[in-house]
Image 1: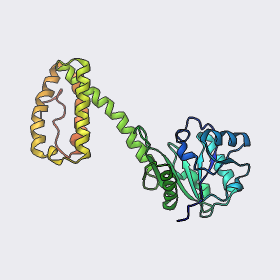
Image 2: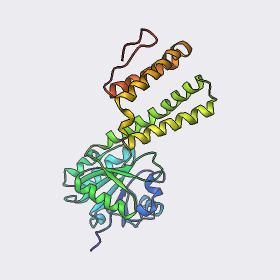
Image 3: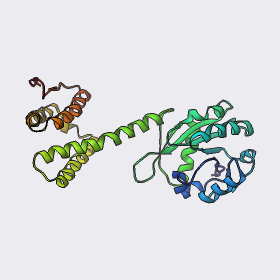
Image 4: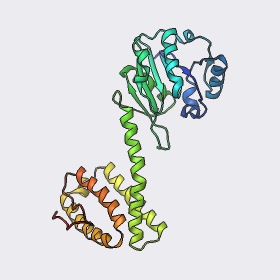
Length: 275
């Protein structure tokens, strides 16, 4: 089978701190690198172990896939210049950016480019790329990533922002949740270090149960049994630590809403409602 032509890179700004700079198996796939100055193109090619620096955008005409890397305000003028100086009809353009999606390449799409975006999914330890945008451009991007043995996920067009919002919610919620459980265990008499370790184990067990869909663990009967135990514990907290009770009530009311179940709200202010 004939190997497809290699990709090229258009870059500006600082690249040494980019995840691309840490994935040499990926960046050495670039056959050519263009930047607004010849000096920058040479520097990027050296930092990324990539192919030849080129002086003209037209020198990238061989590449079926062109990757853009330009953080912040440097992206828009770069895209506008690329739209003027290189033909884009049927060519894949892939933006590597942690927040922007393929809409940022609209000037290229208007000229027939197949626009997509990609970045690494955050906080996973090992690389996992996420891509969204035009179907053919996403496919080209995934082939580029696969050549460096980097797994990837295809999102719906425009789905990157929702994916990253979900990650931000997880990052924002998990630590306070663990801390809240640990505080409750300390209130029960455990030493702080032991309370934190046990809280983390419980959260891990809950995540594992969710991942493997242990639906028996969330049956109505078991939830009722847990509710009774939880109810007594919250009554105790109302007397011993009203502030922690308030934190628990906020989280548990959200859980009850998610499960479409009644919740005995307002423990500290009114009598418990019947479940």
